[in-house]
Length: 158
Image (cartoon, rainbow, N blue to C red; front, top):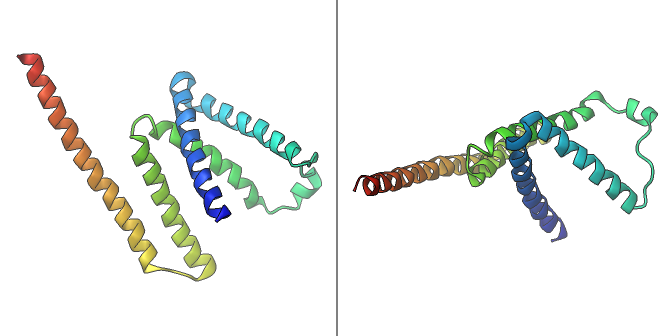
């Protein structure tokens, strides 16, 4: 149960983080906001490290023994923050979050199939249904927005 709560908490923080970062991105620029996002993350990480009683980060020697692909996680994180800074101001947060979730779900399905040899048509169908639901809902929202605009235009003319 604790892991479920932590996962939900992580999801909430991810969404809030995207909103804060994209808001800052509109004010100071996308790259600058991404840099500030990661500087804040570094500071937070140091406090967590100290708070947990650890005062040492991995040594250069330890890091040199790690496979190179391990370091791509940070690079991918920067790309995630940068792209969410672009997307969030243009697409409602609920759609942005669901679309990112859909990408995560599809990636997880592919990774499970390749690494674990575990492919599930049900999971793939579920991901497709989520994407179709987002598309349908966005079209409904678009129609409602157009109707509202027509009403306000008529009121302005009268």
